[in-house]
Length: 268
Length: 274
Ligand SMILES: Nc1ncnc2c1ncn2[C@@H]1O[C@H](COP(=O)(O)OP(=O)(O)OP(=O)(O)O)[C@@H](O)[C@H]1O
Ligand SMILES: [Mg+2]
Image (cartoon, each protein chain N blue to C red):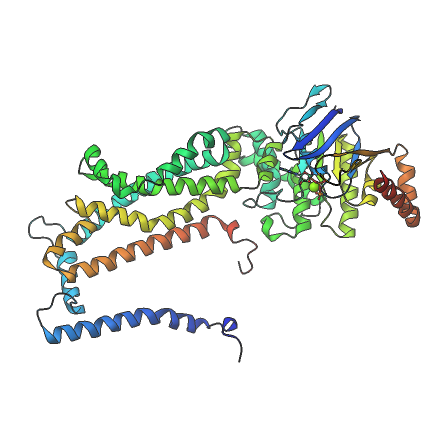
């Protein structure tokens, strides 16, 4: 189980309030898309969920207990960039999680246990469409392929919470569709809670069960850092299937939804 | 006519232009030497190639009448032994301290001011101290190399480690890695080739410290020999020794470069012509 509660959360950097008064209850298994203008604090919020940064005030609770203030294997992550290890091949990148788990001292598996891990990794890599590139180094992959590798790498340990920071920004439409399918399948199979930052509203509506819009409510023209962003819009897509069908059926309609949300984000 | 910045030599051209300065220097020496010898056949300053060859034959291929050693080889062995020991200790220290400083905030807080100050102490200025503390034999020479080279290696490696994208370290933690596992599987493999490069850069200073220490107190070694025969103006020995030291330094640099290319194939990956 992984019920996430965010209570009275503030985040300030010196001379700048990034987030203010964020309150959220995310039930286990929710797929949250987070949207908002660039620089409004989406990545910062993700970092706090990850345990990489601490809130200035307030707190984040996982199943009622304060979040461990350190990244761990219960929370997988795909960053905007630099998410894979340049010195390991595609296959080695993916089995690393299993190696950490299975070999406390060396962090490296050998023999039969390694082959088991490799088989598992090959399965995941085939699913993200990297089955033919097992021996390549990340530098030999395109940006989109590296991003898919990062997703495969994060999935091998079956985290309860998956944090994604614009994971599909660099992908073409076809690959995106494949990745959506993969992600939705894994999400429903594994009952993960997913937090995904995206700039693509349609993507958010296609995938998520809940869309969170971040934006600044108040702006002080003389001191741009005085006020932070809040969650200005929290849309629960309970009738997910219906919404998805609507999206698929009528591109025009989906654009309408986008526009509507866009105006809401802008006017708030 | 294309701009000169766009015109590139071909394969043969590279060899030719590369060889030109060497040939030029050799020709210049031969002419200068011949001129001086024509004036004064007993001149010792610029001995002809034949004299140098004879000197090398004497010190490298005939046993010394007093000790029975082949002097040049004994000198080489002694010097390389000191150099290897000094660089080895410095490298090991850099690996441990440098990575710890780059990765662990408490170690960085504790050590970085100290190492920063230490690296500013001129090693040659503490040489007398080393002679007093460690005596005039092997140890003080090895320690001089360590003192001279280690702070640079440590600081370089600490900076490189700290430059690793934070995302990588975070990512490794979300994959369940402990500090030790992260050092072993993520940091160390990426730092080794950088350490090797840093060692390559410090070969020059290491030789400098070695030869200085040998010049002052030693009974054998390449630096010792050069400074010994200086008293007799034996340029026919000194010049081949200098060439030999240069060659040794060049070969060790080349071998380290080869080591990096062989052992870390990912360095070259994605850089075009692999
Ligand atoms: N380490 C830091 N120190 C100081 N300020 C920071 C730091 N990290 C982020 N910020 C500031 O916090 C704000 C939010 O940054 P964040 O990276 O969370 O934005 P974002 O919503 O992810 O934007 P984008 O959509 O462009 O990725 C920015 O104004 C940025 O300047
Ligand atoms: Mg961001």
